[in-house]
Structure formats: structure tokens, C-alpha cells
Length: 208
Image (tube, rainbow, N blue to C red; front, top):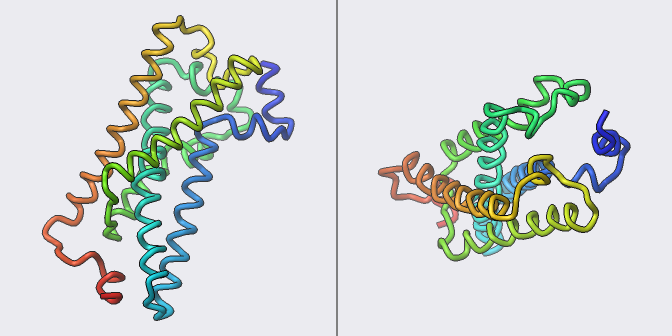
């Protein structure tokens, strides 16, 4: 078995947090926790500036982090799987991850986010604010995996190690453009779901 895979399953925090899927799981849990807090505060009747700020932060987090990162994980994972699953999820991992768990981590993220956007109207932040937040998250993850690769000699995904310089840069740039596209898609989807509605949503209507 690949020594790196063994290390991943030995409880090391480094190996558990080096995959974007792990980051994505944390982001999704964080987002839906914020949703619960927002709903609880709003339903308590505490209509205050704090309530509005929590709802605004919820919407910003969805726009800038939860939706684009979650969508990227789903599309890139299954895209690379279709090309060659060994690039992204070697068969050896089937010993540890049954098919249902794989789908929980790499498939269900997107439909759950879309369902949330369909049921709740979110007020997207300005593009500057949203994209800046996304850029901070993306650069943080990129810096982390580059440090792991070039300093610690731990390559998160095997194909990154064998890429030549220009190809490597091209892949990073292409992924960055794709991530930006995911942000814009999320904004568009939200508008399509709530086309024709003039009120923010039931929660915001009560606050107004």
C-alpha cells in the first residue's frame, strides 16, 4: 500500500486536512450551522441588527465559500474520475471508503446546496466582497498544498507531482477560472430560482 495512504489513516491531522474534500466538509457543516443559528434567532422574534447581520453573513458564506467550493469538489472529482479514477481516488481507498460514503462526500453536496437555494432566497453580496472572500479561501488552500508538495514532499494528488512547470501553472489557472465560474453560476441559479419575487424572503419580510 502507498505509504502516504497509510499515513493518512494513521490519525495524522496533516493528512486529514490536506484534501479539498475535507475542507469542503468543514465549510458545509459551518454553513448549515450558521443557517440553524440564523433561523433560531429569527424565529425567536429578536428582530435586531444582529439578526440581519447573521442572515447577511449566512448569505455571504454561501456565495463566497459553501457553494463554489462544494460545486468545485463535485465537478472536479467526478470529472477526473471519468478520465482516470487513479488520479483522484485510487481503488485502494475502496477498502476504507464504501461507495455510499464516497457519494456522501463527493455527490450529495451539490443537490443539498441547490435544495437550500431553492427553499430559501439568499441575498448575494457584491461581487467584490464575494469574490474576494472566495479568493482568500482558494489562495489559503493553494498555499497549503504547495507547501506540502514543495517543502514537505507530500503531494495531495499524485498527478500534481508529475506535471511539468507550464502544465502545472495551467492547471492551477484553469481551476481558478473554474472556481470563479462556480461563483457566478451560484449567483445565477439563485436569481433563476427566485425570479419574479420582490421580497427578500419570509424571514426578511418579518424583519422589515
